[in-house]
Structures are given as structure tokens and as C-alpha cells.
Image (cartoon, rainbow, N blue to C red; front, side, top):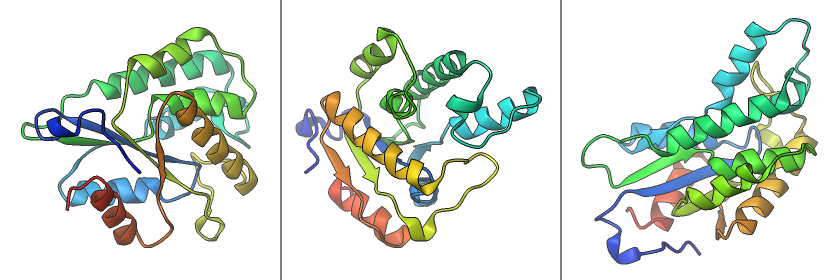
Length: 198
């Protein structure tokens, strides 16, 4: 059950909602659909970073998540963390009372845990400093799983990412709501109903 820190202030301040999940679970399609329905959405950052990294490096074969394949994983993760913090502070259009994010700051922490990477306390501290109001998690879905130019994980890695995301958000004090499988419209409706937006 999703709980907001201050439900009475729902329409007096902007609520920040993360839609996350392992690779190829349908979250980006849902984000785009919500945007088409008039909601303010902040899009995934890592896909453009991965594309830029591929163009700027030579001899690197991306066969798994880019935080493993890039030349300097720590620098890449710091750039990703900084970018997610910048996204957190994006000013939406006037009249917006809710913002949907395609992944949140704790995703960085979860992915580093998933792929066994070292990090300092700043990565965890950011998860405490910048808080969201609701976390919606897409479960693994093998039937729709696919790779592309910016997505390299196997389905098994996607399952592991999902588990790490659930653990990370729970560890940082969030109640995580699983979004059931279904059509883009059905999943979007589930999210809006759960957030009491319809």
C-alpha cells in the first residue's frame, strides 16, 4: 500500500513518484504513456549516457550493464548520480502537482550492489537526502524482454536487478508497490488509481 508522507498536502506541493524496474520490464513505455495523458515525466538518463559512452570509447564491447563495461565505472556512476540529482530538481510546468521519474536516485545504489561495485558513503547519503513520495516497481517479464543498442543485460541479470532494486528502496525506508503485468494502458491505470489520481 502506498503511503504519502503528508497526504493532506497532496495538492499543495509537488509529489515525486519513481517508476523503476529491471531492464525491459515496460516502465519506459508506461512513462511515455503517462506523458501522453498529460502528466509531467522525467525520462531515463542512463540510455543517453550509454550511447555517449559508446561513441566516446574505442574497443569496448558492451555485453552487460554499462557500469561494468565502461572504462571508469566509478566516474560513470558519479555522473549518473549527479544527473539523477539534477533531474530531482527539475522544475515542472506551472500547475503540476505530480512528477513521474523513469528511475530514481536509489537505482544507482541498487545497480552498484547488483554488479558488486565499490562506492563511498555519498551514494547512500544521496538516497536519504533526496526523497520521493512513492515507488512503483515493475517485475521481470520474460515474454516482453528484449535487448537493444543501450540495453545489454540478459534476462537473468534483469531478474537480479529487480531484486536489488526492491532491496535498495526498502533499505532506504520506502514502501515499494509492484505494478502488475498487463497492457500499457492497464499498468498506467493501476498507477493512477493507486496514487488516487483518477
